[in-house]
Amino acid sequence: DVKVTQSSRYLVKRTGEKVFLECVQDMDHENMFWYRQDPGLGLRLIYFSYDVKMKEKGDIPEGYSVSREKKERFSLILESASTNQTSMYLCASSGQKRLDTDTQYFGPGTRLTVL
Amino acid sequence: GQNIDQPTEMTATEGAIVQINCTYQTSGFNGLFWYQQHAGEAPTFLSYNVLDGLEEKGRFSSFLSRSKGYSYLLLKELQMKDSASYLCAVNGGYSGAGSYQLTFGKGTKLSVIP
Image (tube, rainbow over all chains, first blue to last red; front, side, top):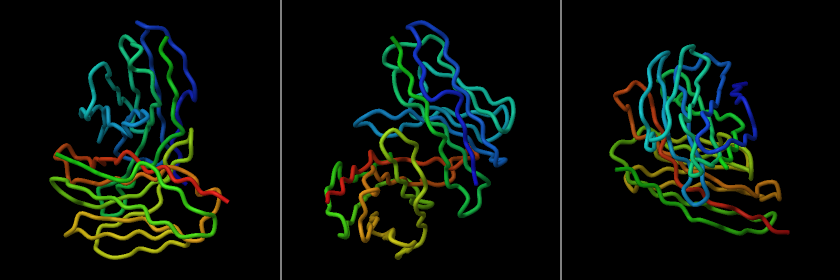
């Protein structure tokens, strides 16, 4: 079974703090993704990575950065947290670019509250 | 651009059949996914269609018409545990960055009532 884990289920931070969200997958997947999910807006892609040290901006990268130093680990960084970054953050991973293996598998999510 | 539409909410009765529709307009197409998401939990993969037609998987079936930009998820013999949001997602094709991105609809919240 694919397993994607995230470092925290719930996190509370203060405005201006630097926040690290970590995601680890155990299926040797090439691709990893960070989304945020907000009521009425659905899932929105922040950043993704298709290889170690490679990253691409998604639809809403402003205020975020990412790091992928190892294949299994993808970190999302909020350089200076703001209240509008209060959200559910979901990490996902997917395998090689074959027809039926770009299915994305999600971690349990981190509910981040910025006060 | 990419646009995916699905109804916001639906209600159905336990034991019945429900069909959740999804229409999409995307610049490319390399498959359509359905995910189930229970409240407070992560989405879990349900089905994948890349060719026209019906894919059946137990109580769940998914249909695709590429020419119409249309898919539906059919849930039979509804159970209370099927109360969840159902997300339609489209793979718009090879991104050039080496990765397949998915564009998600906003989800359909299904409530199953006794």
